[in-house]
Image (tube, rainbow, N blue to C red):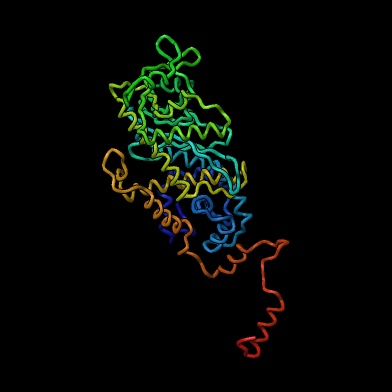
Length: 430
């Protein structure tokens, strides 16, 4: 495969090797690349896409960078080419996700943590999109990411869970129907139980009020067998209750009081009593995972929060620069996720496949690694060391401001004449 204008950019060629082998053919199949004009091949188009989505160049910066690398192009032309790339980028992302999940889908036990996160544009006060993220808890590898609009809530159907998976989920997934469906498929759950959002029952089908046994026990840990019913179906499981230390329990009660006051509700003693406990539901038997182990395992769910924080803090995935529902907004999110997948793949290449596993002692976290690799990929994707500086004037014309009613600020004409007079007469002061 020939790369006419990128032959000397070995760093970018190395980057291309981390993508699916058929990226070129997919660009043609999904009509992202139909004919070569100024952007002459899918490799150059991918560099444009990841310049916009990966390293966060605005359209005029992408155009200026391409002008210095290849030939002059306008930001409008860049915009038009990017609009056609969404199906192609989605296909590339799906292949990257499939390659990561492939080795895990062999009937082996797999611990997965899932969560959702919101994304909105600058100045927006409401959610625009949601990211649904699944992470392998042991390897801390991304397994799956899905982008939906703001109307699509969090539920387990977003993820390719399979028999043998143990999935760690937070309060938002207290959904009896979805839990029953996935448990019947052989998926095990470890769920932060919300007694106000989902009811549990005993073997006779009678509703259990957990506040009563918890109020009566002097123990700090308690395991209660329960059933979850929905539409005539049920699953059996256990609610593991862990009493909070006195200081944390006081803080939890304070939060409950403040929340009730904000909403204008009368605080019930039952709610106040339950606030002192951490409740975790699982369908795994306590002989396999006792209460202390279930509580410790659920705390590992924090790792998915750290992944989301890195994606937002280091990679700026929430810094949308396009309107909601626009082609560029969705392209930006999927392109950023593709960039994230390449960055994580490169981290494993640089540091070793098992450097960040949770089943062994750890000496580092991915934060600084991601930052360093982001610097490397910025140089790789911009290709700054391959600029043709003879086209600098053309680049300036491409990135300059468009004509607008409010002109860019300049000095008053009288001050300009004063400066010119002093220079002409060799004066150093007025």
